[in-house]
Image (cartoon, rainbow, N blue to C red; front, side, top):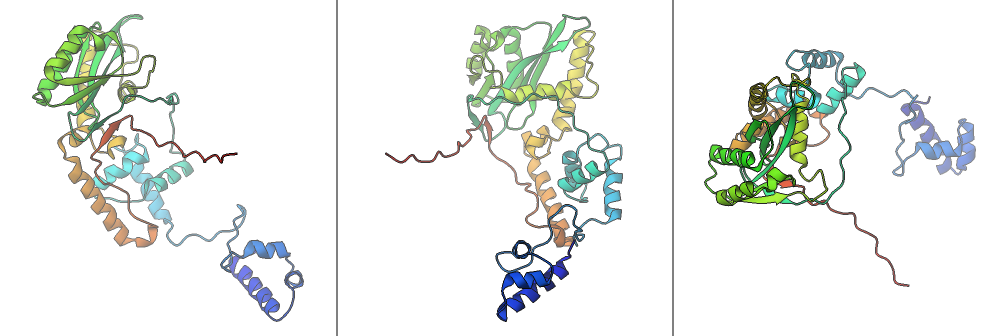
Length: 353
């Protein structure tokens, strides 16, 4: 392998010989290289390129982490409060404590090197659809709800979790566990959620699938009286209500979820109650830039994101050589879409014959 200084010296000698009237090919042969090698070494602007072959010796970047810093990342990541979290959760939590060790990509790279990164992928690939679309610019403008089965004490027995999610903040605004599905019980859950949030006939869209509890006469009349507009998935399409389905996956993959079943309806209700408290006030949601749904719902997330921005800017000023561009974007997102429109790639124009 030829180092960069040796390459630069060889290129300079060849260029000097060519300037004196020699041909490039013989000049390259005198140094034991071919004309193709010379062309591969020299960039369009005349500078000498580095050897990109995997087996070549590459100099250590000046901004690389020291071994002590790498060990510090491993030590912090293995602490009890971070041991079960991925880097995407660890880095924001450290930022909330005023600590910056490295970027998420650096954490992931070190995790892979140390065999600390484990991926659990059980979700099916999403299907492309064209669902109903709504926009929310604040809390209680766009809700989605659904019903999921919770396993009972024996096979074939289930309890039914009714759950209402605010899509702007991802906060659980209403829930209840019943022993059956019905439009009457769904109406009760919606009325309680509306009272708990103090809507006072505020314009709200409620999105759901096409199940009978969602479209029952009692449910639709309750929505009309509360001033809530109903929105439904397309018939035969399972992922028009994807946010709630994704939430149910979060719920059922939560550590401590009794996969063998709940003994009673009250036991299921108690478990869901503790989960809702954790989810609304402690869970840092990736779709919300890792603030809690409760913070997002009340607007407290803005101050948290601003503090993180200050932490990153201070880290960049302390060691600017480790930053190739701007710091991480912690800006507050004020608009949330239910199934936003995706731009289609432009098709080339066809010339007329």
